[in-house]
Length: 366
Image (cartoon, rainbow, N blue to C red; front, side, top):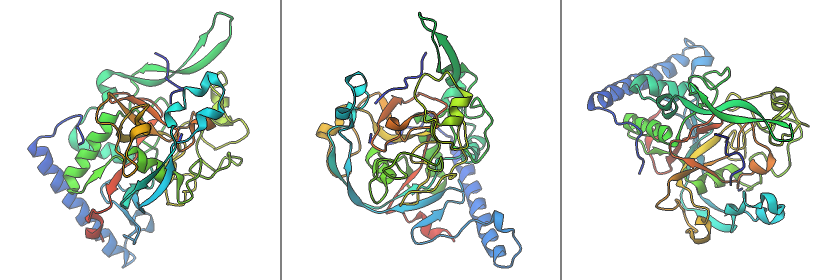
């Protein structure tokens, strides 16, 4: 099965249920986490804890969740131009991959919301697994998309791409990874199971971002083409994309790569390795694609509400956004849309957490 590479710019159902016993244990563990967190802060003032272990305090526009150790930043309400007319500028042969970005229209996000400044890490996901015993989609099926395969066409030409591979999962993505990397090989179902676990433990309205929230946040205050700005990358410091290192590792890669830059990583990079955008968000372009809450429809934009759209009410596929370490520029624009079945998993797909702006959860943190 070939990677559906060139697809598609600019509530919650749980994969598994948890028993009451697990929920009670989770709440007790969370209480212990908060107590430990308070102890760290208290000791830090007495110079009894190394700086490297201390969690930053809550600020007016950001906080660190002590459970996942992910920083959340407050994205202010506002309006932006969602979607694009990019397809009209492309050759007819590839135009169909971008037509679902149209029509470009003015959309308003009516309320502030919190968004994790990075993608969900392996460390955070491991804690979820260890506490619940959850089995991911890829582990259950025994396979995921991410095995590199070279094929030969009728003319003798060779090319490589990802295919379904055995035993690939968040535990074994196919290459060496660390706890500070984004978790991958997770389905939309896995992402919402993680969210439900977090909601159960914190009693806070964590969720996945909507597609509109995601695009608004990714473009930053200036609503740029890429999360780093409007210009194509030149230094390799902009983000983790298909670059010269990726090309050197996969010289027969079937799709275009940007061989003029070196972002220092072949596969995933530790979260937050590249500068944030104007909202304080890292890796909104590149590293891994990120699941959104919305169902997918290629015609949704034509009839979608202009205020807080949440996607169509039916459909078998879910949206993911942002591009990955193996993708080229047209697919890294913040308006680029892509989709997959709720159980689809791949080496370049993870997720990022959101939290409703009216939540008071962070106020209880030190």
